[in-house]
Structures are given as C-alpha cells and as structure tokens.
Length: 153
Length: 129
Image 1: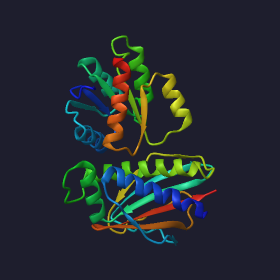
Image 2: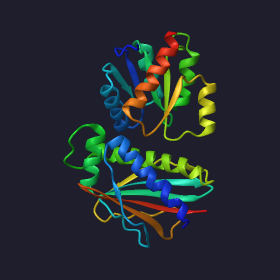
Image 3: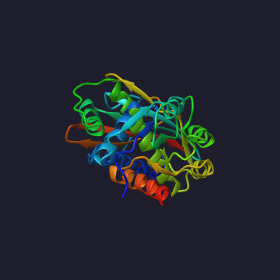
Image 4: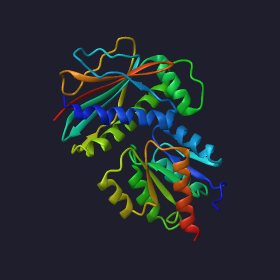
C-alpha cells in the first residue's frame, strides 16, 4: 500500500465531517488490517477504479455516527434507522469525492461507484482487491470510527 | 440585494442530503424550499408550480442532474430558471458538460451554508443586472 494514499483520505474525512457535521475528529496512527471484520456498527463501502483500483470503507461506532448524523441533520438521533444508513452512504460518497480530488494532486485519477451500507454487530467488509487494507482510526468524544482503504496501483 | 423569499427546489436522490441542503438554506434565511428525489419528479414540480431557483445533485437515478438541466433549458417556460449543480467532485469533463448545457454554476460537496449562499447570490445578482 502506497503511503501517498493516507493523507488524501485523512484530509477528506476531516474536511467532510468538519464542514457537514461540525465535528473535528482526532486521527490516530494508521495501521494495516489483515482480517475482513469491520471495526464498527455501521459501514459505508464504495468501489474505486482508475489509475488505482480498490475500495474505501468507513466503519462507525453507534455513538460516533449518531452524533455525526444528529449534527448533519439538526435532529437528535438516539438509535440507528434508515436516515442514519442513508447518511452513511452520503458521507462515504463525499469523503471519496474529496479524497479523489486530493489524489489528483498525486497523479492518480480515480472514479467511484455507488456506495453501499452494511450494518450489524461484527459485520465484515470485503474489499474489491482482497489483501490487507490500511486503517486510519479516528475518534470524537461520542465514539470511534475508522477509514479503511484498500487500493492497488 | 438578493431576495430571500424565492422558492428553491432541492433535487437529490438521498433524503439525507436534501435535508442537509434544506437546513443549510434555512441557516442563511431561505424558507420557501421544496424537494424532489430525482429529475423526473423535479420536472413535474417545475411545471406545476413557480420555482425561482434549482439546486440539483449530479448523480441520480431515472434522470441525472445533467439530463434535468438539459430538459429545463430546452423548455421555453423554464429555460431561464437559475440552476446550481451539486457534485461530489469537480471533474473537468463534468464541469465542461454542465457549462455546455447551460448550468448557472456548480458547487462541490462538502460545502457550508455561507458558500451555498454566496453561489445563490452571485447567480441571482447576475440575472438581475
């Protein structure tokens, strides 16, 4: 995995959540993930193709996503529902858009598919390319989430 | 000075995004907002009520934002309606296609209420000149 892929996704995540949900997530140290188990309660996944191919997944703990969507929509969400699922798809789409724009500066031209959303305890994420993926962990006061990127040049 | 009492049509297949845009519009003083979940529903709304401004997503099923824009510009009654396109990325080809089709301007997600307001004011002022 090319380390050039880290910053575009890190910056994309921070920028989207700051602008749309008014939260400032704190990023932890990136690491490689070898299993397919998701690190959260709800995940958005989007396929990426072009000068690098693979997928991007975002997995949120319930606490984190309830806070993020509550801020985004200006309503107080206490439990998971269709609005939360819908929002996770849109957040994944937006982060992919900003990250791909950032990747253009590194010489990568990448298109994205339509995001899908998966929920449930211990659900798994299968990346298009298989193999290890790069995890960037984040936290806000209400919970944690990870950006899970699997890209091959 | 731009009037804030204009009727704005927000078109997006994601209910969440329509709500986000509605909230952002309300933050900067726009109250008269209607929604449509795709281009087909948007055209129906445009033909059945007086809409002053369209904010449309690019990627939508049934009829994309670009197809909606072309349909609006091809309709003599609707052709002059200001049209702001919302995209997840500013891809050169998309921007060129939208400009050729007569888009008033485009805005890249994510965006703040202030940036959205600036775009609306700029488009509306240029029309009123």
